[in-house]
Length: 550
Image: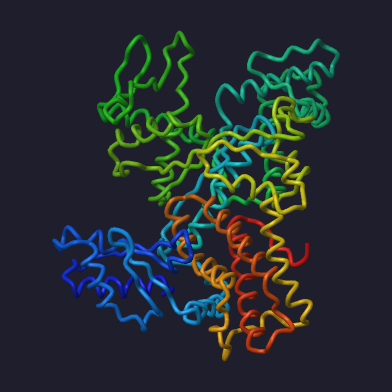
């Protein structure tokens, strides 16, 4: 139990002595102005209606009922309409750091998920080209969300769904065929909707080397299989460069070869939620909140193909049947309409899948800037910037942090110049430098950081404002992790890292650790070690390194 948990429990106990319901759940917040105290609660205001009393009267009675010494309270004051501002004993608060030193690998971890399985699907790009910067944002989000869930007790499987079927794959095969024929001396004719990047020429060259008997590119199916395999490998290299690993790769094509799409369509027909009109098969998605019914299968005149959401429904049935009773999809904001259609299809099947399955985390696109101008084209991909372009420019850590420092549904401007700079304006450099500085304290003092346990140390001497702010920032980490996992928002961890780094740098510049009186040095070594471990933990969640030197 953290200090904040203990304080909430004591507030709840005191509230129940005043007649509050048994399930009373106090809310604690950090005051914006530290001069107001360490914590603030609106508990008295929320109890006004059930207790039938004025908030300030309740606040006064609440303060009187608190066992202050048990939770380190030195003062509690009423503010405004009934807020209670709470100040903790500096030494009591600082002793919360000992939990970090005692079990650094467990600090910030919870067992919310209780080992239940969850499938986090992300990236899921068509194997038609290298991964672009939008896929990169998705990879960073999906991987960080997966890690947050692991930290809170879920058994996570990271899944990549390869869209290796459909019109785009057919265009990929024809584009490769066009390049093969160009190599044979024929005019280049890229089909409408085809792919123009330099990487297609490279695939064509490798195809001819591997298939000398088909130098004219007549075997379109062989071309399709070769191109898809080549680009799957290409995307695997992109992901390796980004440090992302998947547990499962699921092929869209298998849904057709295994008959799962046809089976799903037949089940939807049997459910009574489909109808035919003008030769097309429709699903009554309006029965499940959609603005209009959606075509499942086009008319014969339009090709008779299934529309894209139909295999998505079949795919999510397999997730449910594979035991993933929680599933999270990280996708681009352009998939917004897919959410309603897939959920409608799953509900129409009436197979016990709950409403709201799966969860979706949608992200906005990424704009890459260099020298104040937007970068739009990659040398290899042609029409877009690839993930590896960014990694080559600024490094993996900077790419990951920049992708994660904003909420997913906000537009992201990736400033290459800022990401490359070694300055306080570069947030990832600033955070990693804070970690390196804490490590440097132990290196200069020739002290083994792992021997710092805090045992017998008087932490009450950590009374300077900069010290107290850093202590509070570190102690907020577990709540930050839980909140970020609950909301699937890893940007909260990025924000916590930046604020903790800021507090760490401020303390480092204002106060010496080494060469001070023994009691102060020992206490500050505890704070330096806790800061080092805390920042390293946050960086680990986001998939970043924690360098000891910069």
